[in-house]
Length: 91
Image (cartoon, rainbow, N blue to C red; front, top):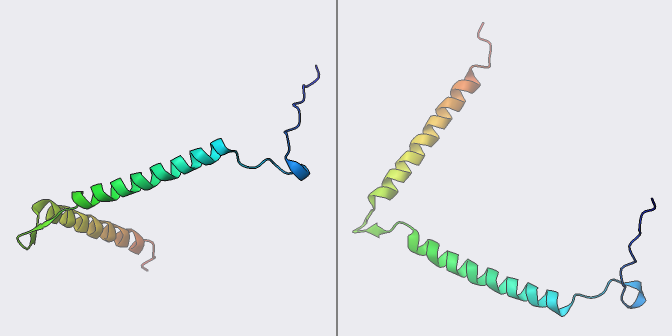
């Protein structure tokens, strides 16, 4: 019937929380190191994957992707202007 209360957390000197333990610091340092190495590897991978310019002209897939993006943007803007222009009363 009665709730069982948990014992109070152990406190450090002067009633403060205990300091970070060595195990937590070690895990934090390992995590930081893994993050730094992963970031470096991802940057290297992204740099090698970007489209290159061969013989002074960009490759065809880059040109096609750019053209598709431009067409999509133009279509979206045309649709937005048409929708926005229809809100006004023309009497």
